[in-house]
Structure formats: C-alpha cells, structure tokens
Image (cartoon, rainbow, N blue to C red; front, side, top):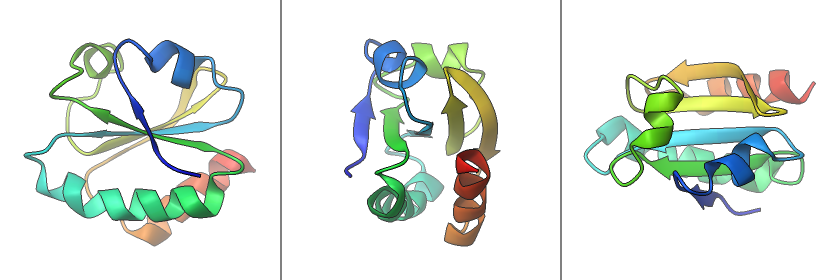
Length: 107
C-alpha cells in the first residue's frame, strides 16, 4: 500500500476518521532527518499497509494541522487510533524503532 499525502483540508477525513490505525509523518523539504526517514516510512507502508494507513504531511504547505497537533520539531511521527494520538516520536529513528512502535499500535 502506498503512502498517502495528507493536507490541512483532508486531515480529518484521512486521519481522524480512518477505520485503521494511521501513522502521520510530518516533514519539510529543508529537513535532512525527514529525507532520511522517508524511504523507511515508504518501506514500512509496503509491509504494514494492509493493516495501517501511512500518511505524509508537508508542514510547509499545511501549517494548520501541525500547529493543532502540537508538532514542535521535525520529523515527527504520530500514531492515531480512532482519531486519537496514541504515540508520538520525534527526530530521526531507525527502522527497528519504527517497527517496534508500529507493532505496539497494532497489537
């Protein structure tokens, strides 16, 4: 399953009202750790995409959602279940750390 692009306008429908858990990757083009994290998120979407939605939100083009969600640093990954944040990770992470977080949300 591919990673979807989420915007301020689509966030409620794509994330808050999703029927599966959602991982939102908040990123910006100037953020080097974001660029390092992106292929890992893409790979995990292929592995877990049948059980979870993977979304990316460009914070430059969509400033409202990150502000409402309290995103203070990039990259930030937030895990949503039934419209609520159940876990949040900041900064560059290893694939192993992300797998552990995903497995915890899915269990």
